[in-house]
Image (cartoon, rainbow, N blue to C red; front, top):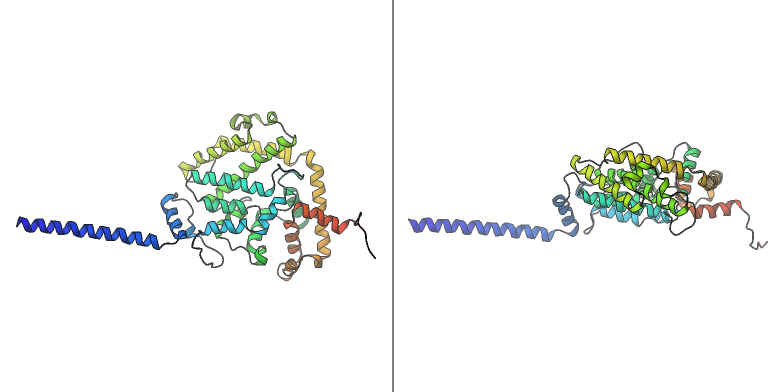
Length: 366
């Protein structure tokens, strides 16, 4: 009897062990059969916060074949990075309409927003790829000459916002009118990085605040370089809570955001930091963005865009062919704005010269 019981127990142990090993092998087999993208998607569920956006759950306006290596958000990042609109940002003004290797451009601003956003996302175990895709794409619809240019177009047509134009660029203007077909999560983050509406994802909310962190600190840094500001002119509250070194200021705001956001599963800054950033932003608008010292440049830039807009509204046939093909669908004003808003600073000035100024210094054969 004892031998039988012992044999039964032994058989049971062998059976359980066999089934356990079979289960492990089956799991290994499934993982082995997964492609790289699927393994990454699986890791997102295992590693990221439950509140993070998951690439597997992303959706697009048009069905798209999946990549075996990259997640949907990684593909969106790459599509933005390789777009013509993103490349043009290197010749678009951030604040200073001057030549100089060390002043920020709209492209370096976007890269800095991406870096700040990824740091915050990693600290909160959110989706870094999503924040990066939104950050790189958030300003692709920006006008030449920064917000001065945006203000001119807004005045000319009644309503223009660079965040809405950025969405239009990625939806309709890139790829010869086909658009980039980005995920809804990235499109939402681009559209709502500024303006009255809040992004649907925590990652989009990160970019919305990281954008402000980046531009306040790097525009302050450029202002020190230009001589328009000195460290001692910063408001006392800003110097007290953030210091005067641009790098340490970014670290202070980012750290506060991570610490404040983690317990509440939302993206926030502490009340004290919110007040400090508000004071910092008001200071920068008063002393730099609306500075009388930069008024001449803003006026000149505005004149260039206003004249080009008027010219092409009257001579629409001189627009590039790809824009003319859209007139029947979108209307004349929209395609002219699409063209003007997409110009780089340098090309806008060159175009103004070609259209309105005589070719002095050249030989004209008749």
